[in-house]
Length: 537
Image 1 (cartoon, one colour):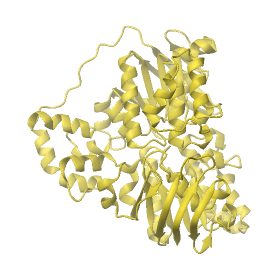
Image 2 (tube, helix red, strand yellow):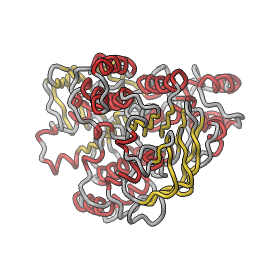
Image 3 (tube, helix red, strand yellow):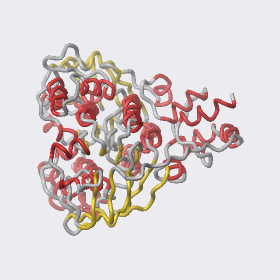
Image 4 (cartoon, helix red, strand yellow):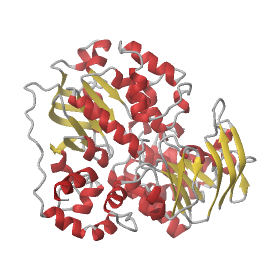
């Protein structure tokens, strides 16, 4: 179905190829997972499969890419649309209509699909991706995860035989992500679709894959069995990290497999003293607070009478399904949204009453779309501008970027960065100002595991310096590693609020992989397991 022969890609002004010497063959009816560090070339590899590279991206394509016999040199993306469906990292950028139903129908209309077939496929697709109840909803009023599902549905409705997806679950809550991945698995196994996807949250997807390719510094491995790929992959989920630490072979890829192997470990851990969380005495005054906060968007109540206090020196995760109100809460705390009812205070003052310069020093928000914060024409210029804006020492922003995102070229334009690199740059820009309250909306979208660990280190350091950090996230592994407290929203209401261990360990939806493997032992991360075993070893 897909055949690559000695493929290389070199972008204009690049010092070396982004991809080099790629040869592989994907059979029809396979689900192939592309893994690798942030910025390693995964998105470029996917773009080669439908002609985005080089027809849209520019640069020089060497070698040959054929999909069902069609050479992508000779066929532009529109010429391959009936064969290859592509969903990029930013689904909203692909929207051309205003509502869910119209967007899903649009692709079929452009391909000349008969009206009766459009109606039938529309209904099937709405059910397939769980959007039937939102069919009339304006796209602008959807959450990021809901927009992701619309983009996937619009591609599926056009009826391609090959689906190419870049980070398809990055904005989805755990339950919605599993629904999407189960849908993809059904398309592969029941209908014979060929699916190629890149994903950083491997804990969600690696057990669904038939084969895996590892991209590292522009080099692409052979197609490997998932367990074999995870033995040496530079990025791997917690379940694999735990298996490597304990010497399990073959490495488990699913919680079911790992629980069977972990029975002796659970007995050993259960005999040890239960882990304790040191009690903290919070400051007398909260650094941020909400009192009966209600925010309505049209007829929808995005938040309903939320009351909470946030304190200096803590990292808090705000979790919940897509559309629960997480982004709305952060926007209200940042002063970007005016409460319909109730009150928000930052250091005792409503953020809307602060002047812009004072507000950004008290509270900084990184939205789901990091590009909204980036205006310069190079990484270097963006970092210098942030240092000047915040009167920070020269190089502070660039140093933060290096810590979070690794090696990023100074001369690169922000729009040419990978999604993870662009997010790392936006995080560095906001963190350079060291606002007392730091609000991050889906801060690990597009980040690999090493980049997330670096981010966790930065956030913990900021908390230790007295900052208040709040993360709206679907990333349960991030919450387990980085936070002290978890708040869960549902339908705009605060339904759970407690320590991270208390909230996550007993949740079937939000428990991290290690907690699922070890239940009822209340450990959340591989580091927790290592620390628990250390005194006994």
